[in-house]
Image 1 (cartoon, rainbow, N blue to C red):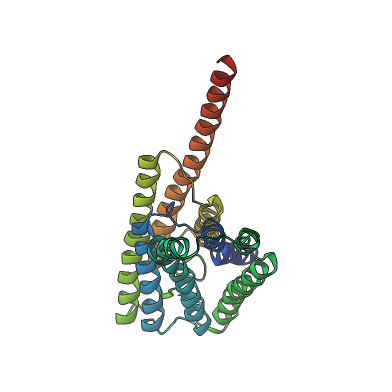
Image 2: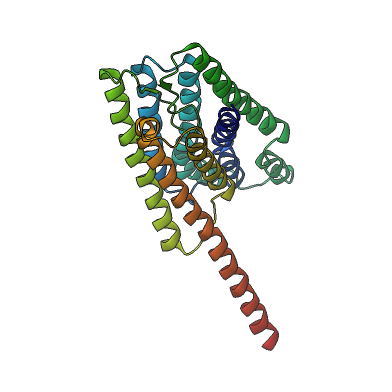
Length: 284
């Protein structure tokens, strides 16, 4: 009983973390009017993984409706990031260029209005976060209540994390085979997507434009998801149906931690450079 409650609690933390993971980056992009810090390959693979997620929920009869709706919301959040990459990467610069060409006289009030518009509304952000938190928590609670009404040999494979598929350990039929195949596909996609971002950070030598909270929440979501399954049972018969998602979440947690280490490393290096520059200026 205690294990079930602990597993559910960890699962809720996982879903909550994933529900708000992309919001800090969305707000950072809006504030900077740029998305140059985010790898397009990373966003593309994340979007593909979310699409697999939605398709898997549709094809897996065991999936709950609320799981499908939450998967759709995750996809929409990633879509917002993708649209931002297109808008701030191609459309916004052209708009600014045309505006500068057609407005030679700049109104004094315009910069003030622009700065005010750049600041994301705290109330709006809290509303968005609240909606995602509610839906994420409702997803886990609905899944746990539904489990009590089903057969005891059914495994709630992915009630948490970003992957929302569900597999039955007692009746691994055709639909479950499809679910497992999609699970391994998503594992490859989600883990592979981190690599371009890590390489991009190394190539640039900094992490400007990235919000560390996105990767922190992703790390917490993945770790608590793995823990929620292992706490419930360490028997191979229970772990096997969840193996694709365990490998996925565990691998992504390691890669997310590496990205967080990059924030620490490049942050320390920037402080050292600024300190050396200041000493040089004082010496001159």
